[in-house]
Length: 271
Image 1 (cartoon, rainbow, N blue to C red):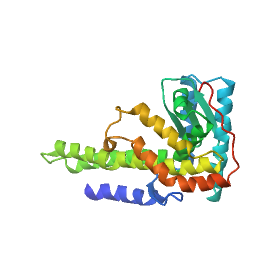
Image 2 (image 1 turned 90 degrees about the horizontal axis):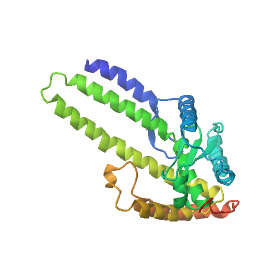
Image 3 (image 1 turned 30 degrees about the vertical axis):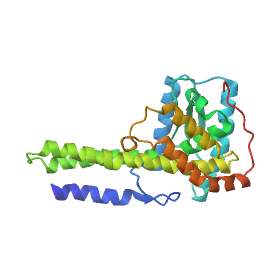
Image 4 (image 1 turned 120 degrees about the horizontal axis):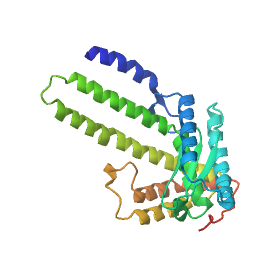
């Protein structure tokens, strides 16, 4: 049984591991890009049916201005790798109670109106937009699905290998905790940090002042003060750590901003 499990797992892992050209980090990607893009499009269509999509002209004009500017920079990065542009879509979900934004594989992006008081203006939106777009560029969704599949395989394999062990239940509990705290959560935080850095550069290249990132994460830190779990228990880095990272990356971002074609910066509707 052990040989069978290894014979099934090793070839799959060897062929699915790839080096991300933007970060230099090795990734496990079990899905092809066509598969992850299709999944993103299907999920986006479902969201559009279920969520209150904003029909406000000013709000939609803002997200389209910023989104298209960031999309140009993202597609330039893809073109350098011989990859085609994404089929970009941008929507605002009219829900002031939700402080969130996301980008699904293939360039399907949504901002909730609840995040507008945090980002305040189009430069703040560009920083968050760049971050979310980079999750798609860096195939983080594919990687998380692949990690979950591998974790399920590991737990199933461990359960089979320890079928006759009297401490099987305790061992499986420890294995599950180890996978969660030792693999899944740290990888999630590393995904956020990768998207923070590359997204900051995309915003700067697109002509938006990267200094807005400091303001955005300061606002986020204030909003979540006293509500955040310890970082090792969280999927996201602490906002204060993110601010320190942004300050470290700012000289490079400012240099790129200086070379860019500057975009006008307007307050978001209602702010």
